[in-house]
Image (cartoon, rainbow, N blue to C red; front, side):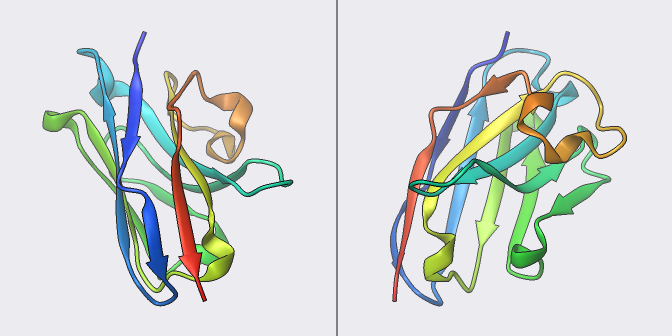
Amino acid sequence: QVQLVESGGGLVQAGGSLRLSCSGSGRTFSSYSMGWFRQAPGKEREFVAAISWSSLSTYYLDSVKGRFTVSRDNAKNTVYLQMNSLKPEDTAVYYCAADRERFYSGSQYYTSSYDYWGQGTQVTVSS
């Protein structure tokens, strides 16, 4: 079992930056594949970014490529989402999630692939 806690959300103007952190508990955190999702009011939760346990593979939603960067520090049991050039359409609650299995056949894109979720952190981008 792993518990995930997100932090770093807030209110920022368009064009600004935020760095989200997701801290995990447990000795096996480094073996988990990790993802970031977001959910705007009235919309379904959508994939944003993901990173393999080794950091060798990263994946991004097309609309955030070149603006967002996912990374992890397994020694600190933490995954990060650096968000630059933020846009009002990035406004959402952001969630991190952990998958006990390695990503395969596009599994990283689906909420159902993940076993554990954080409580979410609000990101609001004003125009």
